[in-house]
Amino acid sequence: MGKVASVSSLLIALSLIGGCERHTSGPTKTAAPPAKATIVPEASLNTIELAPAAVKRLGIETIAIQMRSMPRVRPYGGDIVLPTGASVIVAAPLTGTLQLPADRKFPQIGQRVKEQQPLLELLPMLSPERAVLTPAERIRFAEARNTVAQARIDAEGQVQQAQVQVEAAQIALARAERLLKEQAGTIRTVDEAKAQQLLSEKTLQAAVTRKKLVDGINLDEAAGTLKPLTIASPLTGFVRTTQVRAGVMIAAGAPLFEIMNDDVLWVKVPVYVGDVDELDKEQPARLTQLDGLHTAEEVLAQPVDLPPTAVPLASAVDIYYELKNTKREFSPGQRVTANLTLKGNPEQRVVPWAAVIHDIYGSQWVYEQLAAGKFVRRRVEVGWVRDGWGTLVRGPAVGTKLVTAGAAELAGTEFGFAK
Image 1 (cartoon, rainbow, N blue to C red):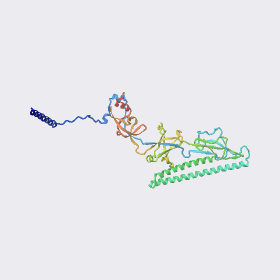
Image 2 (cartoon, rainbow, N blue to C red):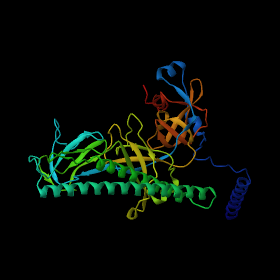
Image 3 (cartoon, one colour):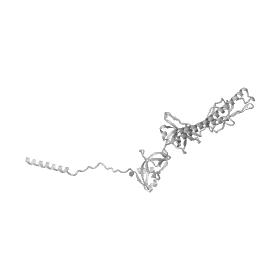
């Protein structure tokens, strides 16, 4: 009985071993992956096909990418200042009493005046009611006459000195240009010579204006009386300040009023020294208000060569521009934004700014028309925007048709929130 049990146990063990060998020697099965991903190109996901009726209902219009002059600009803060010689302070040539010309009011601050317009009259300190002048009055009259003569001599000397400075500046400019042409000079030397010539010309204009004012002074002694001297405006502009009133007695050389001409102003733009080489200083500056909004008419200030100035604490140099102000849109001391042109090729690929769509992440997209009723959304990168056009740093090639009107509606159709 015991032998039979042992044989049975042996047979069972042998059968189990054989079954295991048959199982391990058979083919091995591979486990199924947990997920299967299908890669689809981005362009295939963004393709939209519309029926002709849908295109018409959405009001879709297209335009081709083109090349356009889009110079790159950089904004800087600018100050509007008065040019040299734009403000003249008129002083009393003699000691006397101020009075007004007939049918005229005393000059008011802000009053517009023309060149050589009579503003005041100066009655010398004599006694016109007497028929004969006293010895003291004759002495004062002789002193007044000597003062006028000396003023004329000084004015003539200033004019001649200014003329010599202009001639010297012209010679220096010609020499600097000749050296630059012969590659023995620098552009900076030529610019400084031009600035010095312009400054000397402005100084000459101011000297000539003062000489005209002094030459207009006439002292007349007849029958023991003196005629009042007419004080006229030396230039066209407006009265900026007044220091006297009619009927008061003033001393010789005392300031009477100041006339300022704001038809032409200068725009001083401090520029960081590291940016100077990037600027195209031959191009005009485009001016806007500090809010950055452009006016209906483009306001341009032309470059002008002036003696170099700088702001050491700000590591900045000043660049000057000339601004025509015939419409009185700007005032001295006003702050503006000056958009200066940078160097580089102005011809750029452009697209209407209305054609660019922004997503919630700030990415920029446009819709390209592949065929009639078939559109695809493309990723682009716009560098800068000007006059409603954006420059394409990255995007489709020139000639590609893009959706302008209806781009937002097309985006709504693609993402399913359009009606």
